Length: 132
Length: 143
View (tube, one colour):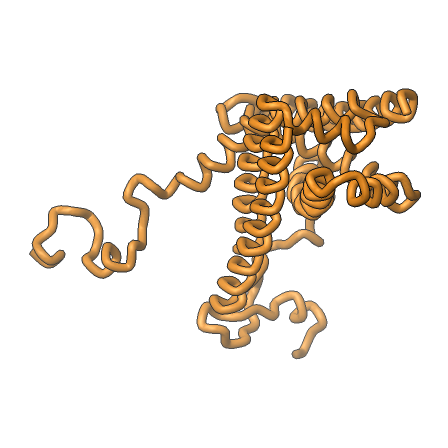
């Protein structure tokens, strides 16, 4: 067979380079929607919680964030939010930044910056949770 | 170039060489419509909210850092510049949230008829404006 003896509809080179979709082509598309759906209740909860704690002092706010379920929901919010943001900005960069080197560089810089922000936020929530 | 209209024909081939040929119509050709304007605003508000995560992270890190660090964030958020940013982020979040629901409905296959997506578009604008004002009225009244 011309295709290196395999029965797949993909070239050997395409397989080696992991090009093309082997049922994973929609992973990012789905990820964007699943995180969006998760963010619907999580952001409603977060905005209402912030409104309810207007005027609270640092200790009161920290106590709120450190309660087990609040900390869990904050972590869930941060995971869904940063995943959603990374996927969204990736599409924007892929649309507007041309040239492979510039595109790859911008994507990596964006992901690195988001990863650091995300880890800092996660660490802060864990610290609040374990301090209580 | 023999004609000014050729300026609109300046493109590049896939291997990067300059070439003059008719280009597909771009933004400046079309009259803005509720569908296209909201689509652009969805992307714009998403990017703007992305910058808002810096404030969210600063706020959480300061909260974990103790009363002094938290007071600095609160002082910034209480300044006119902080309030302006907060207001713009509230508006962006309410819009992105409302229009995001519209997108999720489309992803489920609903709402693709022309009268429906025009009506849902204006509903999103009204909902975003209403929610933004509502949140700030409640927030300022309680404060």
